[in-house]
Length: 162
Image (cartoon, rainbow, N blue to C red):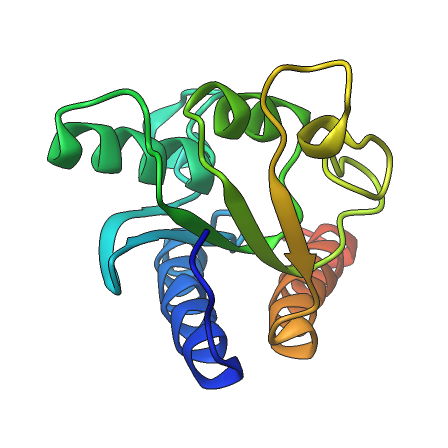
């Protein structure tokens, strides 16, 4: 299991935030993800559900797909996934299936969280693969990005159309 300094965690989460900005530019929910192995980013992803009209194109799924292709292996052993918000149930399942041993996320996901808020899929002892989970890295920046996006969306919905 990789051990990261606070500086490294902040750096990799800032890279995930850059991915989230890509989603924001496409009017997607701004969530970003990077997968790290041996101090190198081997997978990047951002939400692309609206752009590609695919329900499963969450940031984590995109990053896992890219890392699988680069590694030439479905198992992503010795990696760490950094994501701006707590993974949902689907992404938590994909993380476990990819055998990613460590997840670091920024903000909690109180409505859809699959790692700690609603469910604890990654640490459930009934499953054969458990993941070390750490939260709160650049939490304020990650949460603010999402909150601002949804405030703007709600404001647009309230604006009368001409």
